[in-house]
Structures are given as C-alpha cells and as structure tokens.
Image: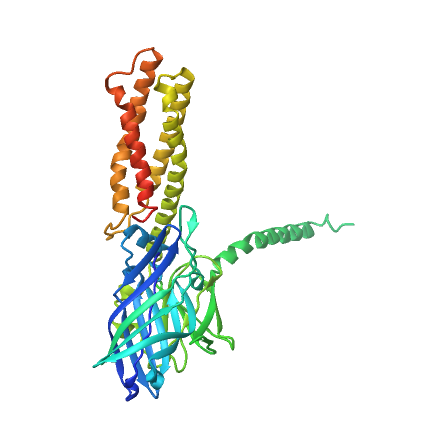
Length: 177
Length: 282
C-alpha cells in the first residue's frame, strides 16, 4: 500500500542545553501490513527532518515522499500509492513538539501529528527510545497507525482485505546543526 | 368578470407566467454558476484555531477568495468555480500552511494543521515544489489503473472456474469414452473460458501505465507467465476446433491438432501459476 507512511519523531536529549537546530541525518521508516497470505513491509530511507528549539520547546518536522516506500513489489507499491492518495498528497509529515528536557530519560513520550493521505491524525504519548552516541542521537519507536486513521480503504487480495493495523517503525539519527 | 378578458391583464398574467417559468428554470443554473463550497477546520497540535485566515487561490485565474475561522476553528469559502486551487491558512503565532486541492463538486472539505511560528516548515526541508504539490490528474490515473486491475484480478479468478471445468471435461471429449455431447460440452466451456480470458486480459493490457515505474517483485513472474498462457489461449481454441472437426468426422485426431491437449495443459498450468505468483508469497 500503498504505502504509507510515516514518520517519526525526534528528540534530543542532552541538547537540553541551548536553543538550537537539529537535522535528520539518517532514517528508516517502515510500515507493516498484514494479510492472511502476505506480510508486507514497505521501507523508506528518504525522510528529511529538522528540529528547532526555542524558549524551552523543540519543534520537529519530518517528511517523506509517499512514493519512496518500497515493499519490493512495484505493483503493490503503486496500489498502495493509489489507496493512500499519494499522487494528490505526495508527502507524509510528522510534527512533534517537546520540551527541551523531555529526553532526560531513555524513553520519550511524544504527541505526534501526522498528515497523510490528505488527513491529519494525532497520536498521544507514543513511546520512543533514544540513545546518544557522540554527536548524534538515535531515536526508535513504533507509531500505532491504522488505515482508518487516514480514511484509507483497506486494499484486498483475493477479495480478502488487509488488516486495519498499520504500525510504522521509526528509526532515526539526529545531529545538531 | 372582466378580469381575464381584459387585454392588459392577460398580457400581465402571461408576462408573469413567463417570468415565473424563467425564474424556476434558471434557479438550478444559477446554483451551478454559484460554484462549490470549501469548508474545514484549522487546527494546531490537535486543538482548533480561531480567527485563522484561509485563502483559496485559483491556480488558473489567480482569483482569490478568503474566509476566517470561527471560535470552533471552522471556515467556509463559497462560490468557488471548479479548478485547481492553492489553499493557504495562517494565524497569529503560526507558520503559514498551504495545500493543493481540486475543486470539483460541492461541498468539499479540507482540514489544515498549522505549526507554531518558528517551527520547521517543508521549505526548510528542501523539498522542491514538484515533490510537495499533488496532482489530481496523476491521482485520477492511479485510481483508474487500480480500478481496472481490480476487475482484472476478479475476472481472472472467475475465469479459473470455466478453465478448470474445461480441463475436467477433456476426457469426455476426446478420450476413449469421448462422445459428441462430451465434445460439445468441452467446446462450449472452452469458448466461455476464452471469452472471459480475453476480457480479463483487456483490463490489464489497457490499464493506464505510470511513467517512470520500474517493475519489481512477483509481478515480473506474473507478466512472464502471460507470455505463455496468452498465446496458449489463442492456440488452444484453434487447435481444439481442428480436433473437434476431425473427431466429428470419425477420424483420429492427427496432425497439428494432436498438440491441442499439450498446449491446453501448458496454458492452464501457466495460468494457474500466474494467479499464484501474485497471491502467495514464495
């Protein structure tokens, strides 16, 4: 499917320091879809992201082209692009706002705002693990997205629709700018 | 009672009637000319934004229409002629957010989410306009493609039934126990199969192509197998007709017609594999 999407989050812990900016260095976003005959994982490494901290708050934006998700099957990817209205809404974006000291523990709980397929969905208190290595911060977690969150009709194979759940695994590496 | 006999009165009644008919008939036309209605909610971080300014700009004419959100964050813009629009929303303390929509029917809904001022925007991420702006035409092409391929998939599965039945009745047509009625049944089922097969193929062959797509995955095997069962579906009925004629004359099946069974079996196997290739993960 589409494909789909999504996204991410960020975070920066020890950056609790100054007002600064962060850039997404590397990312792997992967959606998972289940069907009785198939388990599909679509992966994108094309996300771009930026974080901006000001007055104790950090705003992060991550975006990826919907068509960049690759499941290894071009026919399925085109179908996912269609059901996700990816030609009309070519980007999936994730916005996160966190206090600068949010990363004081290994697990960050973030409220996400995701725009995808022309719809906006909000996810509260999604857990992300983060580790800091040198100058970079790695963030990983899973967004519990569903097809109905974005009003996507479940694609079907042999007249059997895929499951509504579409968890999105997020792995990102951020560095200060 | 000169009311209806007076000339001026008759003219007045006639004119009033004409006007009423014109007004009644013109009402729907005026409604159409009034254009579509675009409405939606402006939010930020999940909460509605009041007094946000929403602007709809017609990409073709450059004409703009504006609205402001109420206390519930709702906006409505009326009288929008059909076309491609750039919708922008902005509010104090937030970055401007834009979206592209195609106005085609009334009413249409578009919700916009704003980001706090100073927060990164898509421009900051370096996406080009081509990457951020959607295309209604491209989406329509994708929709048509998926629609046709869904029909292709369903018809393909349905076609497997008469195909299987045709194979199962082969023995009654040409085997030792072959009979005239068995041949008729086999030929009828084969004709139905061929008709459904080519109808199925039509929805795949003529589905819109998406430029720049590199074929990957099981669909490659599916397409390769089509090069076997496609010609097979042409040859099998042709050879079958020859065999039918020979058997009807009381002759043994001979010559090229004797390949009918082998070609049919190859075709049926390739067809079955083509279904499996996109149904089951190997």
